[in-house]
Length: 170
Image: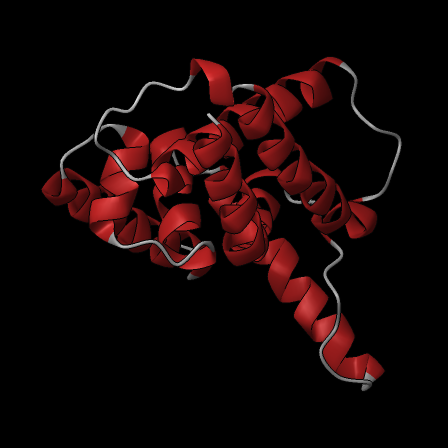
């Protein structure tokens, strides 16, 4: 199991930011996602002894753990909603110093987040894994336990629906 622990440590170095982006999209909170991303790797290390090799890459296992942590986080949040504003929940670091651009960017992030909440859970997961975490359809299929073709169909339907929602037709 020392070899698996070493592999998890290497995955932390290469995938922490991808896992954090995935979690940010899933939970809508950049700061919390950073903490939860670290928790993903802690859980992976703790469960290394019970890991069963299914033939899927370790990356898929890591994103399964991330998915479970996101679900747990969202469940707890619905039971105990935080007393913070939407601005705090959706704040992402601005990439430039123009305050006007920052406000516009924040509004767009909020708009996208609201539209994403109207997608199905599976559609949100596909989009988060494909675009925030930059996984291939095949990798997403392994994480979700689906066939790559089904993932591509779900992704296509999600993008169509998201486009409708953002254009005001939904």
